[in-house]
Structure formats: structure tokens, C-alpha cells
Length: 296
Length: 296
Image (cartoon, rainbow over all chains, first blue to last red; front, side):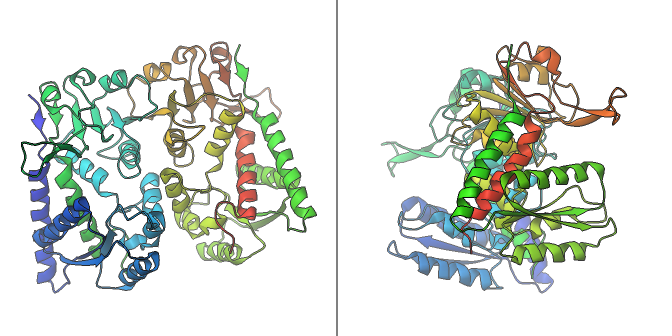
């Protein structure tokens, strides 16, 4: 039976650690870390994510601000708000909840955020610094996975790690982090994607599989080496008439079949998901303390 | 017998293509592209590289400027010169020849260069944009290798590509380029390094091996699948008393043993090396035409 990597519990532990540090900061007369968020429109998923972020801020003792725009908001209005947050010394970090409505230029928005306040780690400067191995804000999902590997003491040095998926927010940064000269890291990393041939055989050689394809149940038992660590980043909503809301979250891994073979595995939900918001809190704390970029 | 991938010939062809474009620009009354270089000290290797860059500028019809500093130069003096080039509308792109003497902060120098003039592609913004898949200056050696794969029509989509080495200037960007959704690219990439176990077996599965470890003769015949493409980035100077200068360049691949097995292979010298300077010329032309970053 595999070790179940409990992201929910780990996230709760980390948030309690952060809250303790914030209490110390407040005792020393310092301001609480402040995370701001911009939400455009009323997409159901985005509403949930942002509500969870606000809740996590409360748990950590952070100040949080939410600025809402309607679907009809213009690029200029959005850019103006970003400029305000960039200039506001009371805001340590902020995010613009993605995806944005189609008429808005997402990349321009990402690049308008001051890299020193870019706690989502999406700005090219942070992406580049991560690749080079310099201090930076690492995007939340890959950072959360590193934290889980670290806290569950999964050996990574010299291990074969297969990353399934090459998205800008998970696959590419995850691969880049796992090849860095540090712990967790120092892995021999292979990135697989839609063009990959022989993906089953490649997975079977992996000591660590990180599945971020967004294809429910893609990783089956015959793809997993006995004892391997399996990290499931998938969060596809699939119809489920037995649930009141009509859907459930489905990971990229066939959990029931893979769990008996794996050495350690993350469930969905309750694995990587809770860690993602947790990483955002860690980044916001680091923004407030200036440990990545010196405060002006 | 393998196809010999002739970097010297390809570089000459590309430089002629660039020269033709520059001639057109001049005919239209436009200014010639202008590459500037800063050289600190008198390191033999650096002197040679910079001299070759100046020569390549001549071949391409570019204007070139070389600013020299003594070994004793201060960080401030260097930063002042960088600021001058950043502000000079007549300079399209410039490089600071690395490595710098130890008392100078190399990373600060790299980050001081305006990313729009960073034709070496070392600035974190260019590294990050490359990872994300946005237009950017790609560092010269990986860009040169892509150009060779392209011009020799080496299939890359869905192919297994093994990158040996994880340096910031070759291994990491090379891996990132080969996983991008484009041609050449779309490969299934594995990055190997000093911590990798079973490197011979991993290499044997590769359709494309890109060796950038700096270990002379590391890739031996038993590591190469028949028909594989082998790209040798190594340029280690090894003693050779039969040469007047006392040394010769040695690649990471045992060329004599591997060539009969490989489908295509780059020699050392005359493979990747000449392409590196050629990529710098391509980047400078792109800086001049504003096709990556709009001109102010």
C-alpha cells in the first residue's frame, strides 16, 4: 500500500507555520503581509479559486484585498488597477485570476505586474530566474509539488522523473525545477507530451511521475513501476449525477488501480490542489519579508 | 556512414544570406546593423572569440564596436559602459564577453543589459520568454543547434532527444527549446547530468543526442543508437604536442568511433562552434529590424 501524500494536511500545517510567523511579525510591530487579487467576470471556477485564496489569507493572518471587474472591463481599466497595485507600498503581492475574458490580452497583463509583486510567478523575469537558478517567485503548483516531495522526504537526486505535460504553469517549470542542482531536484527529467511516442514505456522507467496533462485517468497501473512516487496534478471536472453539484474532480491518474503499486501517491482532491494556494501564501510572505527581492 | 553536419559551411551560407539582407537595407537607405562588444582583460579564449565576432560582423556587413577594459576595471565602470550602450540608439545589440574577472558580478552585468539589446539571450527576461514560447533572443549555441537541425532536416517531432549537461547557456535552454510546440521541437526530451544514473542506457534510446558536458570523448559508440543524430557542443582544449599552438579542440563525442554508427553528426571543430557566432549575427539582425522587440 502506498503512502498517501496528504496535501490537505500538509497545507494546513504550512498555513499554521505561516500564521505563527505572521503573529511574530505583528508582535514586532510589523505590518501583516498583504495579498491582493483582481477578478474579472464571474466564471464559476475562478470565483471558487479566489474565494479560497481569500480564506487562506485569513488562515495565515494576511490582509487580503479583492478588486472585481465586470466581463466588459477594458484592457486599460485592468492595466490601471495593476499600476495602482504596483505602486501601492501596502500591497506585498498580487495576482490577476486567469483565465481572462477573450478580449483581454493575458500576456500583456502578466508582463505589467511588477516582478517583485508577482506572487503567481508568471512574469517572464521570474520564469527566467527560476530556469537560471536565481531567487524568484516560483509558480504555485510546481512550488507546492516541490514542498510535498520535500516534506514526505521523497528521494529525488539521481532519480528518473517523468513529467507528463508541457504547460507554462506546470509542466515546463516543474521539469526545470527537478533538474536544478539542489534538493528536491538533481533528477534525470524526461518531459512527455502529445507528440511523445512510447509514453507507457517511458513512464514505467520513472521513479517519480508528475502527471499534468488534464486527461482523467491517463496514468494506468501498467505505466507505474512498483514503488514509484506518483504526483497527480489533474483537476478535470467530470459529470457525476451522484453528487449534488453534478460533477466531481478527476485526476490524471487512475488512483484505485495505481495506489496498490505506487510507493507514494497524491489523491485528487486533497493532494496537489490545496498545496497550490499554500504556495501562493508562502510567496506572499516572502514578498512581505523581502527575502527574494529586496523591498524598496 | 553518417551525414557530416557541416557547421562551417552552414554558417558561411547564413552569413552570406545576412549580408544580402544588409545590402538591401543599405540600398533602402537604412543604417547597417550594429553589434558592440565589451571585453574585460586579456584572456586568450575571450580574445579569440571577440576577434571572431568582429570578423563575422565584417562578413555580414554589420558595424562593430569593441570597448576594452583592463582586468582592474571596476563594476561601476563596466555598468556605466552598459548604460551607454543601452541608451545609444546607434547600437542595436551588444554583448559583454564572459567570463569576467572574479571581482566583477557577472549576474548583475547580465541583468543590466537592456533585454531588447541582449543579443546573447542571457537576460532572465529572454530566458523566461523562451521558456514560455514568446519571441525573444535565444542564446547563441542552442539557437545555432536548432538552425543546424532545421537546415539538415533532422526530424525532431516525437523523437527522443537526450541533452547531456544542464548549464544555463546550453543544456537548460536546449532542453526547453526541444520541448516547445514547433519545428524543430516537439521532441520528448531527457536531461542528463552529473547525478544521472544509467546514462549509457538513456543515450542508447535517443534519436538525437546533444552533448554539452565539457568531457572530451564522453559519448562512446556503445551509447549511440544506429542512425541517431549526434550534436557535439564540447570544445575542451586538450594538449597536443603535434600542433604548433600545443593544443587542439576536443568534443564530448568520440567522433571516430561514433561516426560510423550515427545517422548524422557534427564534427569538432567545424560543427556547432561556427554556428554560435552565426546565431549572434542573426540575433543582431533581428535587433536591428525590431522583429523581436519593437524599436523605440
